[in-house]
Image (cartoon, rainbow, N blue to C red):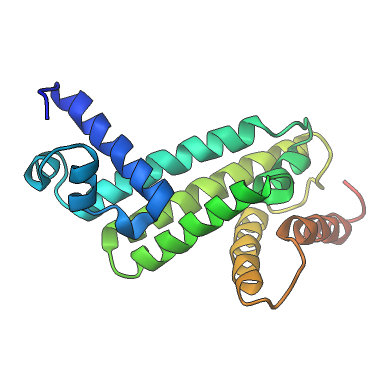
Amino acid sequence: MSYLPKEQRRSEIIEAAIDVIQHQGLAAATVRNVAKATASSPGQIHHHFDSADALRAEALLCLWQRMKIEFLSQIKTTSPLETLIANLGGCAQKEVKETFAQLYKDLLEASRMSETMHAVLMQIMNNSKVKYSELLKAAQEEGELHQDADIEKLALSILALAFGFGFMKDIAFTNYEVHDVVRFQIDLVNRACGGSA
C-alpha cells in the first residue's frame, strides 16, 4: 500500500466498500474484505473508520445518493406528479429497481442489528419523504394536486405505501406496481378535496 493523503485514502476505502456492496452485498463489506480490496490492513481501515458499521454506513449512503442522482437524471418529465411516480419506480429499468430493492433489503436487515445502520435507514427514509413532499408541493402549485391536500400526510402515506408494496411483492401477494396505486391514491385525494385539482 502506497502513501496517500488521509482524505484520498479515506475516499479509496469508501470506493472499495461501495464496490464490495455492489458486487457482493452489504454484509460482505467487512473491514477485512475492504482491506483486501485496497491492498491494506484491517488496522489501516480502522484508522479511518471506528467500526465496520461506520464504513458500511458511509459507503451505502454514498452509493444510494449516486444511484438516486443517476436514476433521477434519467426521468424525462416536467410534471411534478409524474416525476414522483417515476421516482417510485414507474419508469426505472428492471435492473435499477432490483438493485434498489436489494440494497433496501440488505439495509433493513442490517438496521435490525445495528444502531448505525438503523440511523442510515432513517436518513434515507426521511430524505425520501422530504423529496416526496417537495414534489407534491410543486404539483399543488401547478394545479395537479388539490390545494386542500395535506402534503406532509400524503408524502408519509406514499412512503408507507411504497415500502408496504415492496413487502407485498416480495411475498407474491400482489402483482400491482406501486406507481399505479400512487396514481390511484392521488386521484382519491383530489376527489376527496372537492373534485379535480
